Image (cartoon, rainbow, N blue to C red):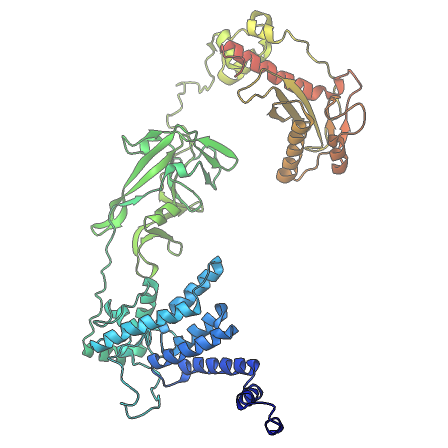
Length: 618
């Protein structure tokens, strides 16, 4: 007022000053809008407004909050608050679906829908609801489970208070809803197979339908079932159980398995004619061509194998196998056939195998309680066959084969005799069969094994033996035997003609205790190649046999034992606590074990290669 009395300002300036002094601050406006927005979300949960009224007011508050960059309308938390608010009374279905989509987008790193886009989606659904209301059809937006007629205004009902009671319903295990069970669309869809005419369909999984029907059949809902039956609901007719008939157990493609793994060992067996059900097998298997369907055999050209224990067996091919009159059917017990496709044929395997997992893909499954093969769901299944249990194995077919000779032993009428008759043979043929053995060894071996008397062939009489033994034989002296396996090993390098993978050297490792040999072909005589083989062998011994190598005997190879300095090989051995024992210069006697073993392998290979007229590179 003093400024006006002095005439120093105008009325407009005074009004501007008063507005600046009395107007709310920016922070107070933000707090006010934030409080109004949160209160409006609560109205969606507990208010009495229609969806259209709530949405119109929410749009205004959203725009105001957006202009002040409030966190309540930004990001995924704003979307979550919005969906939780409308999911109580306004749009339960939309809330559930969009919350699931929001969680999926956040987990996959996708950009989620904005709050503005979510509001527009709600507006479109409300427009669809208005169209259905004008046609006298049911609402779909107010709830996922309610089925009612057109919406009524709160003012027309004579009361503004929501006094609807909560009803229990078989559609859910624990939660309740405000509409009676006789108007529940989820229950009607599960019982009759469809919802009320003109309503939005409810999609239920087979599992949900099964659970609802199980609760529906409980004695608790006897009165409800009687009421619904009077109202005209027609329950879906229960399908009668029927046998599937002849079954086909198939594998998608035999080429998807490069090697099949089994949990059984390989040895001649009295169950070679039987068929077992194996839960650990990856494919069906037969051990003879007599069991396959004629005309279905396809020879294997890819080198396919099966692994049984530590054995790797070649697969001859793939075929189909028919086990006739095995399964129960509508005609009676054991009247249907079981057809196995893509069966691996491994001649000589000790038994025949049916893979339980492949049967499961065809609808058949094993019940361990009563040892049966069944078809259909667990609570409503059919017994296809009962398996026979012997020797802790489950048999689809049990045909024991005697391990004794079938033909009776021929005996003399007066004196029993099992003496084998002497036979004669060609010494040249037996010499080649035995890998070019020496004269005395060949005579003794053939006599003991086949009772064949031959005159062994001297080394000088065989051109291949004479050529192979023309090289100098390395001298050696005996040494003390190792106290345990893998206590001491010896290794040496041997050159040979370049192989198909450009290998030029054979690294032979001999285990001193058992005399077993390990061969690795390498391309170059380098420290890296030698260390790769030696360290790999040491790691394999420690992993498979839990043994530590103490001594390594070898020659004075300059790649591993240089004249000056220390190599990585020596440092590695010192770190592992391994003692490297090398002979004096130009002396091979201390490492004669590996020298002799490698020379013997090379000599045998030269003999067999030259006698068969094979190329040197093979």
